[in-house]
Amino acid sequence: MNKTPKVYLYICLIITLLWLGVFMVVPPFAMAENSTVSFEKTYQISYSSQIKENNPYLPRVKLIYETAGLNLELLPQPTLRSLNNANNGVVDGEAGKLERSVEGFSNLIKVDAPIFTYTGQAYALRPDIETYKPSLLDSAKMGIKRDAQWALDAIGDRKVLKAESCRQLFELLLAKHIDVALCPSRIKNNLDPSLAAKYRAVRPLEPPIVTFPIYHYVHKSNQDIVPLLEKTIRQLTLDGTIDPRESWLK
Image (tube, rainbow, N blue to C red; front, top):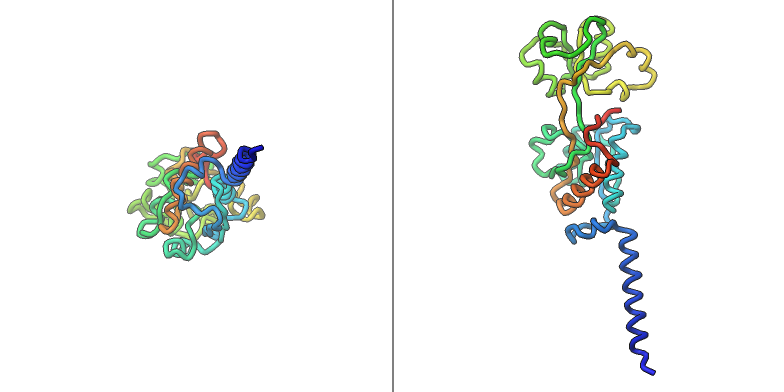
């Protein structure tokens, strides 16, 4: 009896099982991407240590890499060092930034699918200031964060009080040294919980002043994973798993 057909069937079965095993480990759409993508490598991605660990921004980055079948290690670092290390290839990328924040960091490649939205908002304590209008910038005593470019753009050449943090601005509101503070949306949730009661009366004003998309960035040496990450983010957005319109602070 010829055993060749049986041997052939066994070989086909083994190949099929191995192929199915690969699909169980790596998502099918990931396999269709550039063959140079390394699914064994652990990608070290830095982020600003000013971001609290309970911020939804970090689990979202983890979800994107996990869905793409990529290994990830998130590394908290001081804000500027995080950008410099990502740009210099010390780490593999930066978790998320506004486009204007990475100007001049020429080695960073944008993953061109937004993951969150940065929203700049006005905050007030006075009961007669109920909503935000551009005319408020002329009629109220304003306070901004010293390094907030969007707030500097909104203020223009108007007189303004500058502080190092939104917490300092809220203190100035409570002390009535300013009428309005310009800070990120939902910034109160990113402050120490012990301060929640103290700043309860500080209200965000609608509508927001600015909104900007936040993107993930990788060092140019990892450009092979960019199409895969873009496809993953778009798929997660399409099926409703993530909403890039959400504010990165909750």
